[in-house]
Length: 304
Ligand SMILES: Nc1ncnc2c1ncn2[C@@H]1O[C@H](COP(=O)(O)OP(=O)(O)OP(=O)(O)O)[C@@H](O)[C@H]1O
Ligand SMILES: [Mg+2]
Image 1 (tube, rainbow, N blue to C red):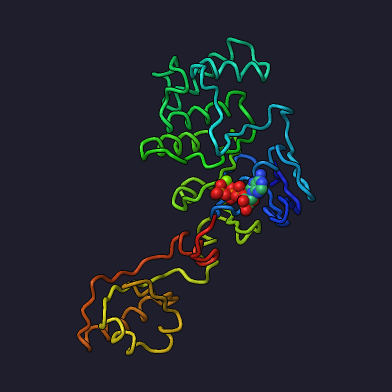
Image 2: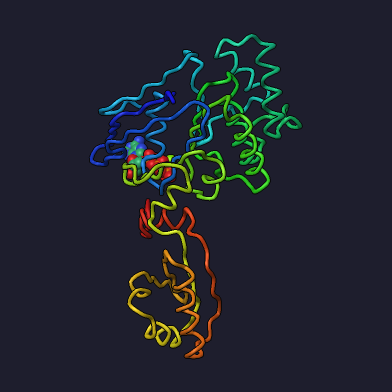
C-alpha cells in the first residue's frame, strides 16, 4: 500500500539532549497509528515534526496529501483553546481560519460537538468547562476542517472512563475516512485503538507492528505468576529446576516465569508446590501483555 506519510531518518536535538535520534517510519491511509513510549521518549517532538511545527535537524517528513493546507489536524498534548469563547464560537472561528463558509463551519461545529458529547454545553465559555470537556473540545477543534490526517498527542489524558470510551469510539468511527496518529502511555488504550503501534524510547524506535506481533516479538507469549511470601519464597525457589530459574523474575512476593511451554512449566511448578506443601497466595497463567513487552524493552527506571 502507498503510504500517506513517510518519515525518513528524523533527528531533533535540544542542546545536548537528542530528543529524536534517527527514526524512520511510514503511515498508511485510513489506519490508526499509535506512538507508545515513556515520559521524555520523544513522542511529542516526533508529532511536532510530522505536523511541520518543528523543523528536524536532519531527515524529512513527506505527506502525500491530496488536500493541501487542509490535510493536517492537530490536538496538542497541552490544551489550546480560546478561554473566553463558547464551544460553538471557537469551532466556527477555527473553521473560518480554514476559509470555511460560516454556515458550513457552524453545521460541522455542531456535528463535532455532538459527536464528542458537548452539544448540551455548546454555548458555555470554554474556561468554565472541566478538564475532560476541554480535552474533548480540543479534539473537536482539530477536526473542524475534515483533515486527511489527524494527530492526537495524548488524547485520553485527564479523561474519566466514560469520556475515554466516547473518545475511543469516536476515533474508531472516523478511521478509514481519516488517518489517525496518536501518542499515549496507556498500553491498553493503544492496543484497543491502534492498527499498528510503535514503541519509542530515548528517541529511538524499539519495535513497531501490530500489537500481537509486538507481543510475540518478546520471544514469549506466556507468563506464570506465583505469589509466595516470606521464607516460603526462598524454599520454593530452592526446588526449581535450572530451566525455570533461567526465566524467573521476582517483584516482592510475585515470582514470574516466562515460558514457551506453559503446560510443562506449570506442571513442574505445581509438583513442587504439592510435594513440599508450599502455601501459595495466588497462582495464574496468562498471555504476556503489551505492558510486559514495554517494560521489558524500556526498563523499570523512572523517567522525567
Ligand atoms: N523545548 C524543549 N527544550 C529542551 N528540551 C526539550 C524540549 N522539548 C522536549 N525536550 C526534551 O526532549 C526529550 C523528548 O521530549 P518529548 O516532549 O518529545 O517527549 P514525550 O515522549 O512527548 O514525553 P511525555 O510522555 O512526557 O509527553 C525530553 O528529554 C525532553 O526533556
Ligand atoms: Mg509528549
